Length: 100
View 1 (cartoon, rainbow, N blue to C red):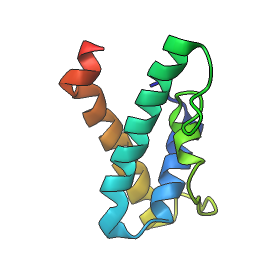
View 2: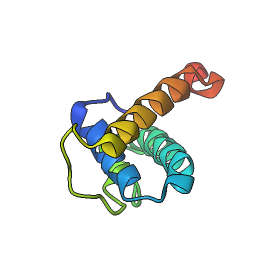
View 3: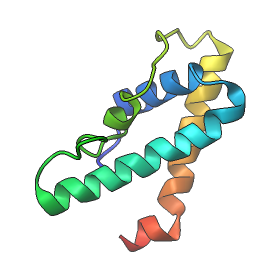
View 4: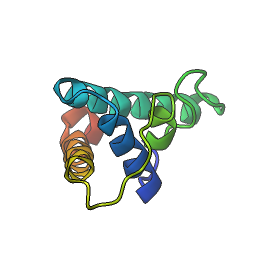
């Protein structure tokens, strides 16, 4: 996956905010896998992945419905941010991510 920036986490959190809570973990994991796969595709073939874009989390998130961005005074939005950051941390610790 490409380098992560504020916009990547924000977009992913906005996707989760628009997702029913029971499906947020699954959707977040899928976005991370798509970004990772797209990055490998771009590096290997030198062009954008047809479905998942340039290998950023932002590109993977923008394929989905994003809620309007609330402020950090919205506890659900803060929880979505925390969820995305925790998922990124866990994804980076996965053996297949380290091996690549």
